[in-house]
Length: 73
Image 1 (cartoon, rainbow, N blue to C red):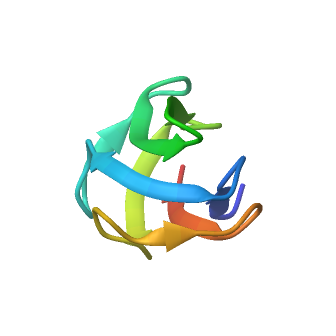
Image 2: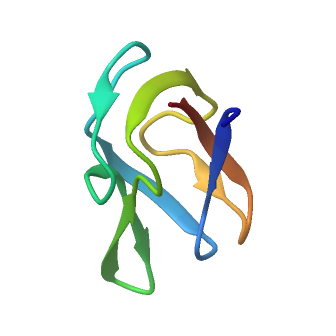
């Protein structure tokens, strides 16, 4: 399986990032938390693997379906 892009489920702001490039994540682990309309929205890993790239930082504004990071099995 090749790398998988993790996309934003909503338009909002990156509140907290729980991983760094090189971190191993299991499927379902929270990668980051977005804030939208005063709600916290967790972004979870869709596969288990290593975080290969992070395209956002805390406090960045993101759009719906924007690529946030890449995970490689």
